[in-house]
Image (tube, one colour):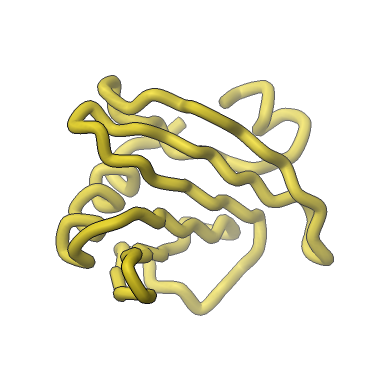
Length: 105
């Protein structure tokens, strides 16, 4: 995470100890690099964390919505915007995102 931050200025939250990173992809955008991190939680749920250094209108605390079969929790911290996406209930995705908000890298 520190190497990513130093080369891209993307500040990743600290992931829970039982989450395993399965893939990391860096994408160019008009606003700069964006990072997509695929993770598997300790209970087997697969999710994606999207991070972009860009001010947005996203709330400071996670807000989750259902998008088809997936739920998306989105939030911002200072000049960073985040989205956590996965299958399941929006309330559960919101709770998982809340754990990321409470940690700092």
